[in-house]
Length: 268
Ligand code: FES
Ligand code: FES
Image 1 (cartoon, helix red, strand yellow):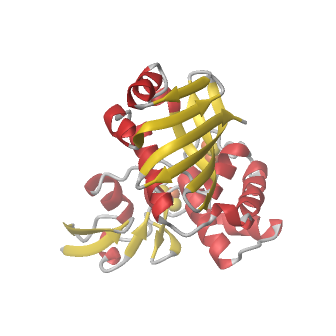
Image 2 (tube, helix red, strand yellow):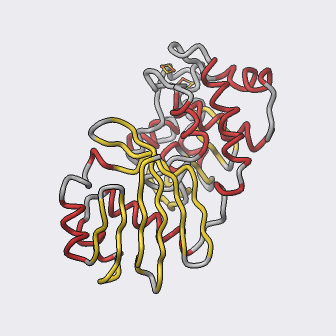
């Protein structure tokens, strides 16, 4: 059968046999393997996705039942290269061990926080009755949900998507993608970059600064926990994966005519 649906806001039209499960359609046909298969029998919750905003077990649905639906998987729960407050809270509260159950937990809890914005501990535990975890014992998961609510309560974290936010996300994308040329092009020719290591001015110096081991897999911004903009300036706080472990950094950017003119960076 031919079906059309969106997955993470991207339209898809696929030929699928009527017997194929939705989880297999997502994993095997669309290559979104963040959704896990733990039991294949509707018990473990590893395969939970959002279907039209409602959390469902994708091993309990046929792929053809997604026809016309809007599907969100763990890959689409936050902008590429970033984590949302729930994901940040899971990391901060150590709510993950093997992590196999985590995509389903995050999706289920996303639905919970929309359905019940301020759940009690009992409501959190009851909601997770369909998500089995053999590692964490749920204590840290409950802590993470509470921490996520605190993060979300700060208005600094949920500014609507803006031109500045798009600029910043693009900056993170080229930084995390080790695209040195595209990164340098984000700066004005006489930009001033101030870090605790010193002051760097101009394209060539900025290129050398980033070439010197400050890009690549071990220097990726893995989450931006705080994003504030005012006029032509941005202030961010981020978690950065470094060769020495996780670091918490802050950045202030001045952006004029689409180019960074000043940047201040430091470690919290
Ligand atoms: S794989 Fe779907 S509930 Fe376990
Ligand atoms: S962290 Fe391993 S099953 Fe949940």
